[in-house]
Length: 187
Image (cartoon, rainbow, N blue to C red; front, side):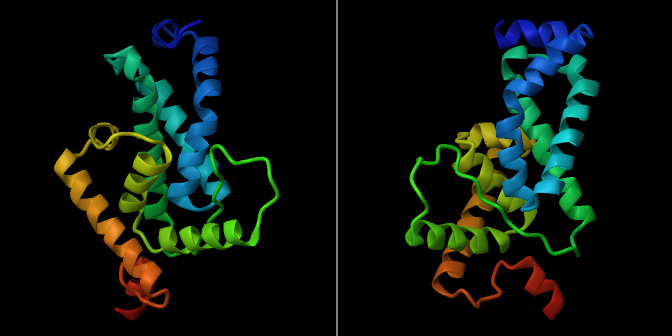
């Protein structure tokens, strides 16, 4: 059954249709949540919160064809809310490649993943959400803006700032620039 028909049935209260929609998107939602929150348990909470919001607000969705972008927005916003509530708790990152090759990890791949992990760790949750949605989920900037309900110009400026902070972190791993944890403890 196509997504549009499932969304329309779910909007009329069909639990099975919504369960099928959730089943189809949960892997991508979980990946985005893990990248935003950097904690698998919190990511599950974020996905669950986002799906609960989706079920509650589904009747207000005007364009059933935009369901996936809409539910991504709800999950990312739920993750940002969780991150704000748990800001003082250190969080570990677990990166999972969407299309990982079926070869054993080489030391270069591990080093690269560790570098990305440490660089993402330094970004604030809104900046990290934009990087995840654009580079990992593959959404174009206008869709990232629609997902987060912020202007495209804001997405561009936050992405620019996040990429700059990531470059600084790569060039100087000991730098506190863009590191929200170090910035708070040194203030």
